[in-house]
Image 1: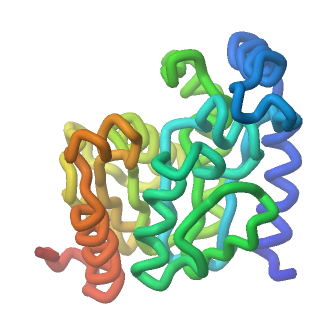
Image 2 (image 1 turned 30 degrees about the horizontal axis):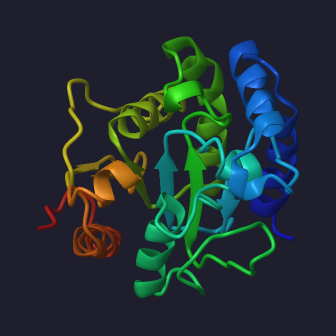
Amino acid sequence: MGPRAVALTELAKRIVACRACPRLVAWQEEVARRKAPAFRDETYWAKPVPGFGDPEAWLFLVGLAPAAHGANRTGRMFTGDGPHGAGDFLMAALHRASLANQPFSRSRHDGLQLCGVFLSAVVRCAPPQNRPTPQEIRTCLPFLAEELRIVQPQVVLCLGGLAFSGTLRALRSLGIPVPQGHRFRHGWVLDLRPAGPAVLASYHPSRQNTQTGRLTPAMLDEVLAKAQKVRAAPPGQPVA
């Protein structure tokens, strides 16, 4: 196990043990007691969810928070929210881009392997209505910053506006100069190299976005292709 893998393993232990936000702790445990009918025979994870993927990743994906019956149930980012959920939509795109060995993400034991990709989130506990408070985001953000410091990715792909703003705050906390005033826009690139990574924005692959056509498979494929182009381009060179 390499030094990044060791550091991520130790960080994961601290993330899972965190109880800093009483509202989130109570909610995720209540969800685990009630359960969704489809998962009534399962034992929910019901703890904060650490990042998952390749410790040597060049591409670092950031979401908002675990889904109540997805990662809060399975204990792995973007995992278990159903065949039409964000996890499978994202994994299918990563598989098409040869960044994942399979096009689905159902459980921690499904054999999923990511190549050059690490999955993370701004908040590690499932929030009510999928809406963490500003204080909860501030409290949890050091975990994201620490994962970014350990992995040192070349490109960070932010899935959604809150992931985008949270990532920029996390990068600033690491001392990386991030210009102020940038707004989320799908497909937009903020190149912070060489001081930091290039930051790429995409709509989140939530059901609300994918089932309404706001984010299509082709659009996500284009974003991943752009991430590859950004990785290959010299710092500061515009990428179409």
